[in-house]
Image (tube, rainbow, N blue to C red; front, side):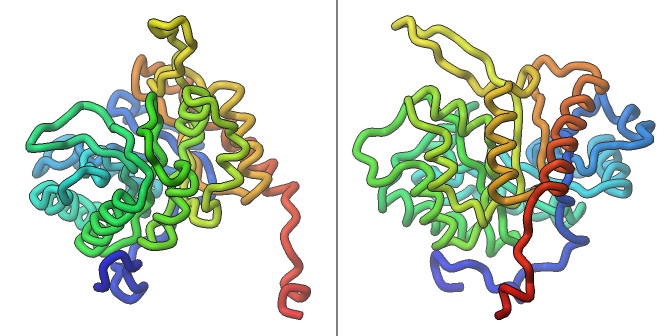
Length: 305
C-alpha cells in the first residue's frame, strides 16, 4: 500500500453493515441484564477495546450476546496514534484478533498520544498541528488500517493546553488528515465544546472547518466545570453527568448540517442506573428523528440534470 493513502475498498474485509443512524449507548457490564430485558433497547452498543483483549471469559460472552441482538462499535483508547513512534505491534495484533472475533460494525480511535519512550500514560494527550505531525499520524494510520483491514474513525480530542508553533487549527488538521489517510471522523461534540471553551475558540467556526462529510459517528457526553489556579473556569471531559445544554445545541446544529448520523451517549464515571442512561439515549433519538423528518434532501432528478 502506498504510504499515506487510503486502503482500497477491495482490500477491506466485509462486515455485517454499518452502524444505524440512531442512538446507541456505551456499554457497562452492570447494565447487561437491563439491556437484554429492554423491550426497546438502544440501537447499538459501544465498548472500549482494551477491556476485551483477553482470551475469553465473561466479557467476551457478554459482548457476543449483545452483538447477536444489536450492532457493535469498538472504541480503542490505547493505540497512541499520535505518538512519536509507530503503534505497538503486539497491541495491534491483539486488537486485530478482537475485531476478527466479533466483527463489529465500526472501529474508532483517538487523535492523541499516550506513550513515549517506553512509558504509558493514563491520558490522551494533544498534538502540535504541523506538517511533521501530519506525516507521522498518516503513516501510523496507514499501518493501522492496513493491519486491521478496515477504515477506522478517528476521534477529535478534548484538550487543556495547545502547543505553540502549530500550522493549522485542530479542524484544519483533521480535514487534511482525513483527505490524506482515508480515515473517517468520530466527531465528539463534548470534546469539541470542552476544547473550544478552554482555548477561547468558537465552536461554530470549528464545525464550519471540520470535514463533516467524513463523520461516521458522533459522541455526546457530560463534562465537569473546575476553577484553575488563576481563577479561570476550566471544562473537564469527565463523562460523569448528563449531556449539557450547550452540547445538545451543537448536536442540533450538526444534524441540521449533515442529517442523522449514528450517535453514542457516553457516561463512564459515576455511572448511574440504566434508566437514567436510557433517558439520555432517548433524547438523542428524538433529535435524530426530528432531523430526519425536517431535513430537506436534494431531488435526485435535479442532481442528475
